[in-house]
Length: 192
Image 1 (cartoon, rainbow, N blue to C red):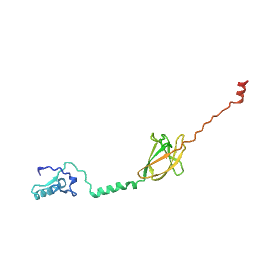
Image 2: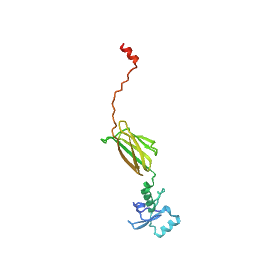
Image 3: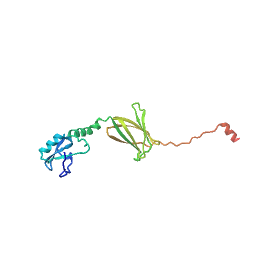
Image 4: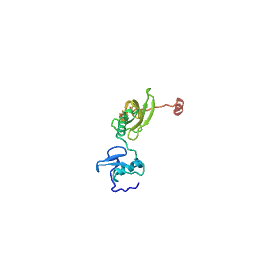
């Protein structure tokens, strides 16, 4: 079958109402047919019934499959509830001192139920330790940094990313002098 395109249409197939191989164009108020989806007999009958004036789409390569409204709704619903189905979450712990300045290279340990470290992360230059794939719910962490008092905290991990700021107190500073006396025999030789 040979045909000629009298007036090319700029309307997008996906913008037409309806589904399947026949859709409706509200601009020109005509049915538009996907010629690739018709058999030769069906095209001949369509051509004869329209008097040789039919609107259609002819595609030279496979079109991406269009999604039905039901499929789009199902995809949207699954996307919306996926955080509820998640079994893991992420946690960012920011470690600061009393002036709210960050503490880089602090050791943040995730503890198991026996308070034994199972994962350790050092804080970055902004004082942040990022944990991924944590079990949802309560998780215990111990934060240790030189010059500060160690602190244990409990964080509730949610399906999305949870943030927690932990303030460490400055530790006690001890100064002292230790005198070690040499053996008496050495002292006698020196003072004799």
